[in-house]
Length: 357
Image (cartoon, rainbow, N blue to C red):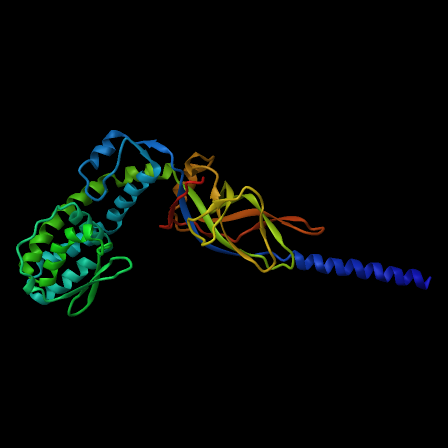
């Protein structure tokens, strides 16, 4: 009898120990949301001719064709997006520069103009295409120092009151030969000569702004039709055993009581960014290991069952999303569905062109 009791205690203790181990192994992974990416396939798409004609004379937003790869279309849209977001502010800065009367006001306005990321890129396009004229200047009149970084070729104006970066790849002779007259004219701080240049810059920038904003909404609608979402996460296995993340899952987009599902697939991303690679099998994560992953939609969002609804709520303030996927473990409790918390579903600027999808 005593032997039976001892045997029973041993069996019960074994089950309890096994249960404790299973409970420990059932600890959920630690999942951190990083950002939303916007991916593209590299298909060839058709663009209506009147949209192409609207950008026919574009300088910065050029490259739109009736038959174009999504990669190239996205570049054109992105440049139009720059003008939509920063164009008016840049025009105001240019106006302040042209209206400046005294040297102090002019110097401050010049610095503000050159700080502008969009204007910096626009001026570089004008310079390498020889679209600007310059008044004669004497190198002896140069009063400001200008240096160029060796690694990336970014220039730097050392103005008396502040410093401003400008351009890129200026350490390449083929680029510098076009940029040098502009830079050296700026270094003279000659108001008349600099205003002469910026009068043309302002005119061309205004024309480009008008082109870009006139077609921006139409291009955005096309862009949305070929958009794929990527939900980037970091997953850390906190259990004492390896786990495997299923390579397919589901994203749930939510606004109020309305929920819209999206089929998603798993991609590994060592840096948590666009250098991703599709995973055709469950992803194994060792105990204590962290992995960066991205859940990409299986198809263009616009082609999914609730595509229109999802695209329309992407900018809504209270829109949310989460991702659901299966986790496989060793033991009796071998599989369960993990649901991430809900996160904001508002648009991010991060984009990637994913040639692997």
